Image (cartoon, rainbow over all chains, first blue to last red; front, side, top):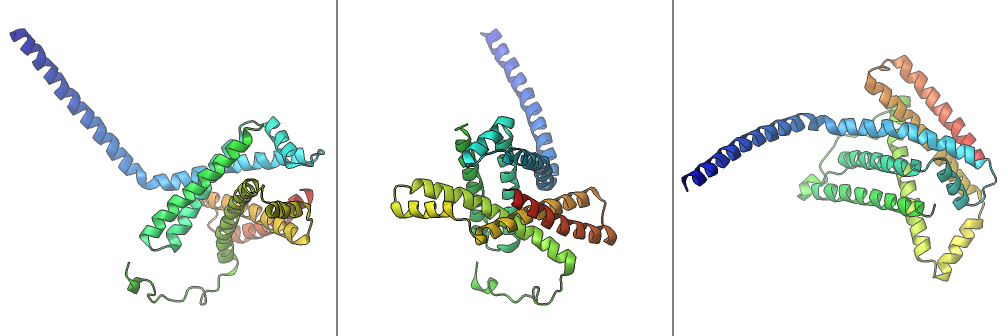
Length: 143
Length: 131
């Protein structure tokens, strides 16, 4: 009986130690995130625009290469686009959609001064971009 | 919010300032961004609308006539969109260059503004003619 109690006490000491370690790690991470959060929005905008640039250029080059052939309908044109690059269209829609969302949020922050309307419009912009991305994804399943 | 915050007096900002080349290009960057995003949204919404209501004959007729139309008005709209697309692209590149730290002197700004305007119009025309 006494040995059982001693075993329980050792587990208690271990749990106290683990608790302290976890709290220490948690607060360190929280401090790091709070320091870097202010520049996160700026860096995310620059990253999205910088990543969209080569993807858009590749997209344009691929369209010019495929338009010269005898493709009359939109579906055959899209099929030729998918044959060259499988995941190009989906990645470009995701990154361009994020870029659109960030840009429209900046404009809404500048010109809308009512708090409720601002928050609702942020949400609606994100909903619309995700709906359009879903549309592109479901359309791409044809190919 | 109370009504006193809605029609508060502000100093004149549109009627008083003469923007010139640099200011008008920066505001056009924002306007072209809005126009392009609304264009993409319009494509998605129109396609969904037409495909959902295809059973209604009148809406089907509208879609049929729109497909056969080759008018000047729609093609001018396409030209403006290609020009605005390339304009937004080039001013975006200029913004990224400003973020690295270079190009804050007036020479760079004037030269790059001329290059942007001429290149966007020419490349937009070429793409519109090809497509």
